[in-house]
Image (cartoon, rainbow, N blue to C red; front, top):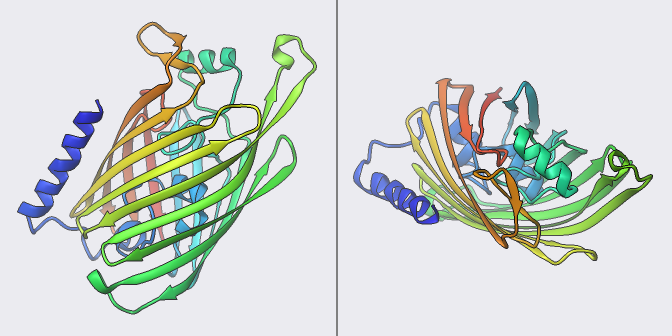
Length: 314
């Protein structure tokens, strides 16, 4: 499956090189919000996911955006506001157990039941993030240069604790890069199994990313390293490619997780021992008007499901 994703990304390159008419419609707000003025994760179709990984990816451009993703009648959303130099965002949903995020931490029986029932991982957190531009020139295209710094706080509603994080994101001509580091916590409750025990699992995450944006094409590569005292280190790598065709955005993604936790086998509906776990993603988004983006996503919540999304720009 990984090879098929790579072939798909190469097809994106073929489109870009052989069809000059393909481009993000300059009259649409989505071009500024998702790519043309961004400094990180241009290929990621979900701003809330990129913000949770790196607060420096919060858009600082003047404007206001609301993003929502729905599955089984439940909504995840993010609100973003930029002033031209400073941006801020809030999202009450963590991005664990999504195609773009780290694994969730839960007991094996809960993990197995959730996968069988195709229920998304329940959020425990509210993330507040802000970014500001520290270096920027007025050039565009190959001469463009910009560096943003970001700070975030993740508040766990179940443990009443708040943990910090910081990040950097930048663009040099057609290339983008980013780095972030944060501390986090998940509450694991044993009460459903007859034990009066709650465990606060704490860990650090470190994210590296590099990418390229060429007006009609965006590519991103990210690596997330997770460290804790009680579990072996985990690594998640993500390869994303998005092509902008007038009012359309088509995204392909591949996520690889290297960890000691069990993997859910969708065929046998059981947990199996598997160190390297691979999942793929497809997203299709369309702008019916210049301020609205509608989309459908396959495997956003790692359930082989279909979810829907909408983003409004004001």
